[in-house]
Image (cartoon, rainbow, N blue to C red):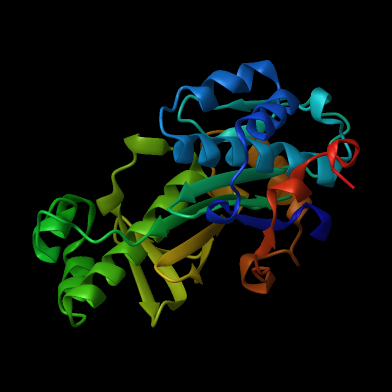
Length: 277
């Protein structure tokens, strides 16, 4: 199962393609992906978008050895990407992946059995508001317990960092479930010990079906991976039953480690036949 567990990240600030190089990489991706990339006006946003798509295709190619032009990636109504298959020859019964980008980084995480979500946050210092004014804009997404932890953590910079960490874990959870913007984030209450041993209460009840790991990618950049037992997916009961049987008694979240992120260059994501020697 380890083959289906991937954690990749790209630092786009170190990638400065010419227009011809960018167009070449765009041509490698399926035509239906092009408009989602070229719709951005700013080149930095186009870079994030194309690397996000490239990570998805490169990961599927790496895991399943499927040529780029045969990979079919679609998205749910809520926007979560998934690999479209006939369901018969899948090596992993619940292979799923998730991507995120913010600031200088774009990352992807995949899991063969557990539901996975990922979120990157880049600490942005508010320019026209104080720190407290800024985070008050998001107070309705936080519980009273979380709010107290944030505003009482210390200095203004520490308050901002704490807020972004809470935001990161909440977003990773929602992206793992695939619920999107419709999920009320104040239903989630996160507890931690210096951001280790993280657990979540959902509607006031501790959930044993989720694990979270938040780590610092670089200065002012954090990434969180949320991993949930497939039985927490109530949207597809038949699939959930099959996956729970596939996991077996020995496969539980407490025994599964979070691998480290591997830093890759954009060139390493291209099919071998397209790489410059």
